Amino acid sequence: MGALLMSLLLLRGMSEWKQWQCEGSPVTDRYVNYAEGFSVAIPAGLQGRRGQAAGPERGVSIPLSADCVGVVVVFGEPNSLEWATPAVAINWQIDAAAQTDLRIALQKYRARLGSLRAAGVTIRRRETTDVEDIVMTFRPGGGPVYTARLTTTAARHERDRGWFQKVLRGFRLEAWR
Image (cartoon, rainbow, N blue to C red; front, side):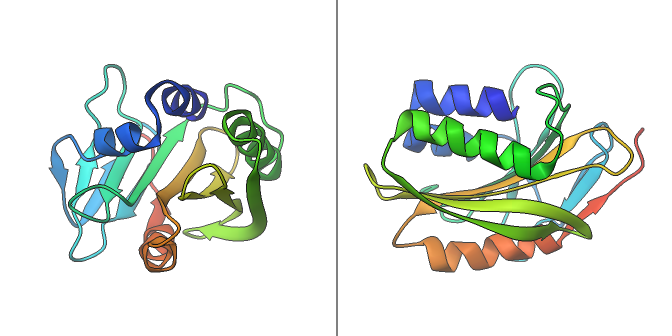
């Protein structure tokens, strides 16, 4: 989904992609995905959306406003690009972002996705007002790559990042079924 997500962003544009994240059946309280082995708490006052894409369900989107200017997406997917570490995966995300906007500003950081150590980056696009926070980690012992992504605007970033932090804390591993 990471490579697929970047392809969709290139083809559709950021605002159209965000609108797509506001579609789907509603989820409240906790989203559980046993196929990918994770769950995430939906913060009180927000409503998640299950994806409607064909194929296996990979995750959930959480619109942060009625107009979908800000959205958090959390998903799991196979490590098909065989990234060695979350930091390598984040570097791949940075390279992909640089292909769409050569004038990005970024800040890497250490993060946690639930109890798991993760790598993160904030990407500010200079061509637009878009800001993304991406946090990635791997399931211990092998398996899926977990990605949490906040996509918003510079004007909303500080407020939306608070919601993003709540979502990150609400992530937990689940047994596969």
